[in-house]
Length: 397
Ligand SMILES: *Cc1c(COP(=O)(O)O)cnc(C)c1O
Image (cartoon, rainbow, N blue to C red; front, side, top):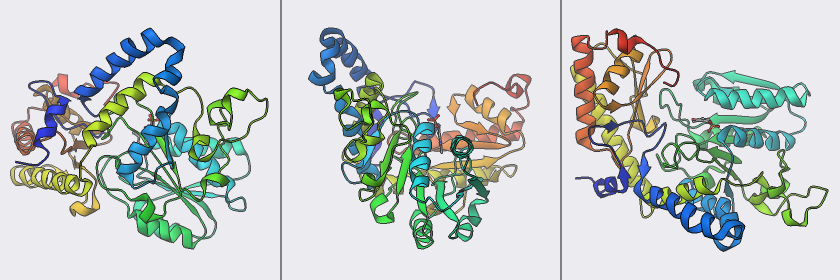
């Protein structure tokens, strides 16, 4: 019995479903459903606009930032919640670039999630100052950092393979070359221990609807190293990042500390849901969670490989070099995943041939892992995947 088994009861997990996709969208925490109802019926309804102060809606972005900060090794007052991750990436790159005015390169890798690259490129094009987005293979990042690099922008866990970057070593290399580092923790926050302070990371961003279970469209977070925050000019200078939003000055003055990374009105209902979702992490020892996650992923790999020779492990074999997911390549991975889903086992597929399985110790059990492994072996051994209904591609994979 894992020490996490009692936490499973905190989530709504439909009967007959084995959910191995919490790395893409975490399941509904029961407390979150109740909190959404309460926010709507007990706050918005009766309080109307007074909810901003009476129900402390205005404080949610900072309070949630501090709660997430505890999971990623960020001190209180250095993390704030709002907007989407794409926007937080843009903010971080824009601010970081201004702090390295003489340098023209943003360095990233081909394992990054495309929106991070798109947002950075869009920003560089808008700036029109001749900046360049350099994308290298993940293994080549460290060697590619030199004193022409302004900003290193990386996602710690590769969304396709689960490969884990060494945050501490890369940050140290970047700093030695005078560059700043932005870490995207989309697949790290809530999945493994992260210590931004120990890594001396300059900026970090991430989303809250994956391992943090904040729900579809839940807002993102941004962290800035405490000693840098007062030098950071917010590129998205919205009124709620202003030093005195309700003075309605015509000129922008950035707010104190991390509040300057706020932009506009926070999505209160979604933030209340996230607040309740984070309760599932209260009292969780992230090192113990990591150990359990490794146990689950090692079991899955061992069982799948023992029963099936037609899939290839796409994730690093060393569990300490991968996040909380396991990916297998199979030429007909899309169809095989559809066949698994038809059996109630939900993972996902990433082009061109990757079947992805996320493991969340808060609710996934060893029995589920074995059940999924057995089903995958069977679907491939019998050719069950090879049916027209499994081969037809859907819009969201
Ligand atoms: C999931 C994910 C995103 C998604 O960005 P949104 O703006 O929230 O849609 C961005 N970057 C990475 C690295 C991700 O894993």
